[in-house]
Image (cartoon, rainbow, N blue to C red):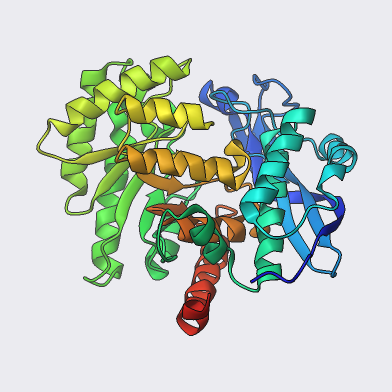
Length: 417
């Protein structure tokens, strides 16, 4: 229960760092030269000065009049500006906007997360704040309500949105980044539920006809046979960032044949492929993805198709669901803005029988990752990312520990909530 008449007294902001980097995806897919961590070449997407730029953040603190502080971090996703996404975050400008335009939050009661999130949406609409700002403010609102109520954010979300009766553990997907071999060992050691992501984000990485991905699947199975216990049966999920469409000449039948071959090779591990095709528009992407999914479902091998690109708003998600263009949709929380917006997208997925992947970005922070855990548990998501970073260890530690703390609290005090 909340303390009586606690209200927001102040909004504080500061410049911070993201957990990774922001990359120009279009420039990468046209070919770049690697010099260590630097990517050399000309940027293509607006607002990029270089193809790879350091991830940045704006830290938000909502301070209540009783001294309680709620924390949130505004961040951009790694591939900002691609597939209809907003441009990357520039911390100085966003910090100025937040200092100037969040005054209406002062005096707001700390009683309901939904109520505070609605206020964030109202001020965002009035001042045209970007999704990154809404995301950080929403995290801080959930954290503040959670602290005032003295219960985990997952309990707050479950009670106020009623997608599940009780928060539960959510399967965790680890991300490999470019270190798709070494980092698999970490995933096996730490028993990630879904592996390995793979970062096959260019036609060169995927190989002619997808040959490099097929070779990788063979290696992955050998690695599991050698080092994993028989009881460990992770789901395979590979993100190809539309590269399959490129190497297949945008042919749906060729893509379907490749996924059939991939699924046979990956068996007995359940397999998903994220973003097999990325079009120049939402409509084109949905049309091709729906046709591809229909062909794959007619096969005797089940490979699930996961949508991510062009799924940046509730309207986007509803369009993918209505056209049966995905088995699972990644709800990339920084792109959606407030958690209420992400939860509305999750509700649309549930209604349409589509699995909910409450995702995000390796460029997030420890604060945003922990907040996402609470929401994922509170809505009963089918999957979430281990984040931030791409080293596996950091993201798995933050997300797993937050989940275990919450489950332990629920076991000890859940009946009293």
